[in-house]
Image 1 (spheres, rainbow, N blue to C red):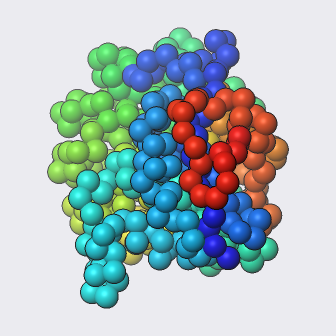
Image 2: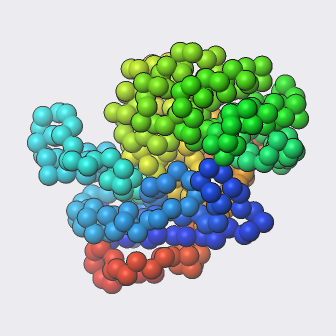
Image 3: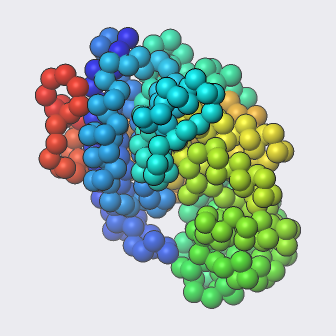
Length: 402
């Protein structure tokens, strides 16, 4: 089996005005991602996803260009059933053969950001192909699954203090969730405003529902400490991205100072960044995004680091279908995983992009049983939301409409 075509598209899906939300990222009017298709000479196709923005919206022309014109040509003719080998080849670049013989990484320069996101999209697609080629779900290839259904938390929570309680209660009623996540931080201005919203949320939900808070890295260490003190009696389950990812020492200082578990990692790429977080004792929960951290292959390594340091693994899954389904398989198989992020904001990149129905029931989400990642792309929908970047496909033949 060989790869004979690689193509990526910038997909932009409008969100209806009455379903949009506003956060520190601004008004979210579209859901964007780079969706990747890898075709083989046997007729099998794998789908992947790359992200260069943690929020729903973003500009993806440069990332798509990298996949189509820099990485894609190197893949044509390779066996797609070796995602780990291909990952290391792309990460090490021109020194891949040297790195393989030496037994340690010799990564090419500028190896993070777009580069790792692009590698991750290919990696997700190759795992999809590997599973399909063996007619088995990816979770089985990763070692098996814990259960056929996994607990999820409702992710959203942007409403002001007078509406946040009702908003989060609606999440619980809609999907039977036992945990919810709300946004705090710069979107509220002062820390005490966010604290008031958390107190209102706890009053509305009572004691039986976990509340996570996510600051999107918008506090300083001092502000994060003040906020944590103000919500000390609200039984917060975790404090996500309290400070910017670049300040790992500050994250460690905060973790040592507050009783709330610290979760972080959606802005991090590769196992090496998470190794640093673990060694600094900067986090309790690792949250790599499969479409940004380097795909399934790298997320497995990150989950194993979490397990070795007695930490937990809860991937960031505010994403499209390829990334979300990759997260389902990872959560099912990894020893350190414990909960799935389920977006309660408008997410057409999951719900409208695939034929399958993705839903939470009784606070649980089904683990797919189908071969590969277990979803079927609606190619007509994909084609309708493609942003034209004016390029041809990589591989044999002419460019195919998604």
